[in-house]
Length: 503
Image 1 (cartoon, rainbow, N blue to C red):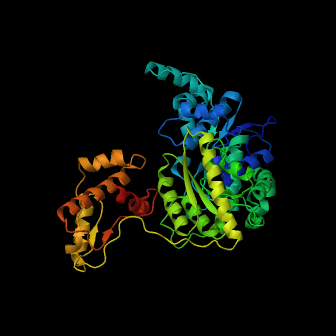
Image 2: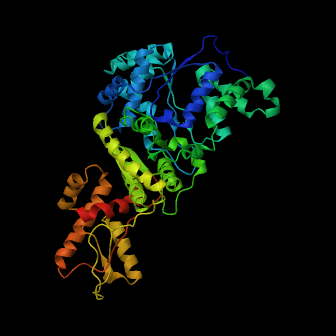
Image 3: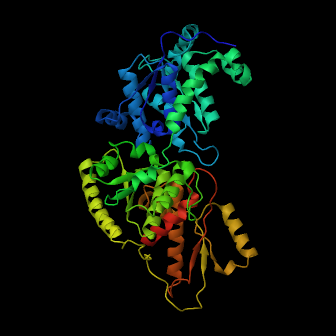
């Protein structure tokens, strides 16, 4: 039932402290490998040098956090050329089927590898000697010449779908087999051995039990009184930082956001301080797909009664966060809670941001003083934009939708006909040069579907108002498709309610 014996020289595993490292599943894997006897080498906290390398090597199409991972991997492989393995989990989810992580966690290690060397070179470096000797002449005869450049260790990308104990043990056992060279037969057969016989017939499973128990209990231990630790000092300003773990956990990217407020004496709480399993999203939560969206919404609802203000942190060019952070910013303000949104990029200067932090702190201190005086309460909600005039009962509502496809147009027209609403609908105008201009100029930071659908609505409504100078309809109803999946269709209307009045 065994494989080859574990080498007396511990294998050396590199772990980049970026992106997926800030998730509990990765930290369980790190601690497990240390307990199991592997030599674990972590990259340091992000330095200006790592940041500069990330900005230089990483594609401009990648978000800042993904480029930062490339910088950390580069630091590991150049400063530790003797690494045997590089561990970057293929992080799909930590809560099973409820939500999923951002798509950049899929093959993040592969992205780093391909940014530093050619895939073919990496495969040749780690092929058996006989296969390498046979492959090189064939490749060279085809005009493909392996460069033999930067050597990268073997990339390990275990799939992570859940933090449940058994699921994480299976992940750890798979990594153990990879790192310590356990045979495929033992890896496949030993988990099938009945528990009562594993002591005798599954030695590698047995070797993993204690290291895994230590790692799992250490990382998953949760102080249920975290909120109590946040609340005791009533004189302190209470601020909640809402953003992805790998962004708030990187002081260099966020210009010392968390550290600055802590140093200033504020009580700070972040998503990393709360357990998603202890939270529930609010009644106004949108249909959500990403784990961070679910957590952010639940965090706002949970902390709203306890904080003096929210600061939302996002990464410039992050499409998913471009919608959810603006939505939650508006919701916090509607609840009467001061809230700010910062989007960071590689050009962010700490001096400029910290001046803004000082301004926010002064404002939150005033809010804190009102809280202590018992005068903090919800702020009356004000509606931005022109209000529909009272009267004009003859005006009818207007129902429209953005242009999506000819097929959708036919479906919408037929639904309106069947419901007897044909006289109320305003079919959208097809994509035109005007729509393309709105997509490429007016909304450059958003994705193309959002920009074009917003441009389509703006063009359709502008054409309607030109044709009806007598005044606006009694009410404008905009329909928008939504569904389960990574695209943010379900959040488009929240952004369009903000953007359309400005067009």
